[in-house]
Image 1 (cartoon, helix red, strand yellow):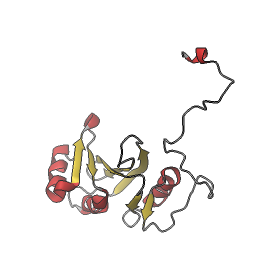
Image 2 (cartoon, one colour; image 1 turned 90 degrees about the vertical axis):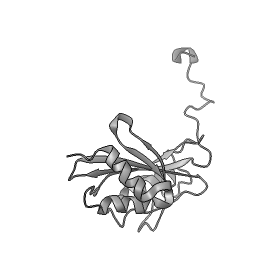
Image 3 (cartoon, rainbow, N blue to C red; image 1 turned 45 degrees about the vertical axis):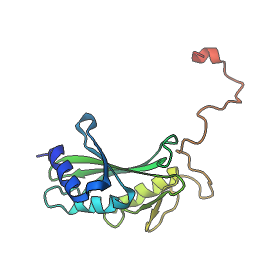
Length: 167
């Protein structure tokens, strides 16, 4: 039986207090934003908790919000308790000038490739990762393609007509 969101919020807030920056429930999917320094401790707590048992890492991905000054980059973790069939989303945000996040590979073996992909596309450096290298892009690439640092369209293109695009 799924754990009610309120039960999770109360337990996590009681344990981590001021480290919890925001809680939301979009479409009844509990989402908690916390501090980067507490993410491993929080996930370990959820993993080892005898009732919660969030022992499956569904996904780990990066996010880039260039207009959010001082917290441009982020990592989103999706956890699942197979015992209670409860899902939880955790978010952390940090400056693009300091893209350091502790690795989760010591707790979840699956985090290995997910962290490498996040590094490859967003430039998030997972400290303590056993083999943090690019896996989908070429090694000498000096940028991170999923960051929103480039225009979506080439302003110098001459082969299109704006009237066809409603402009």
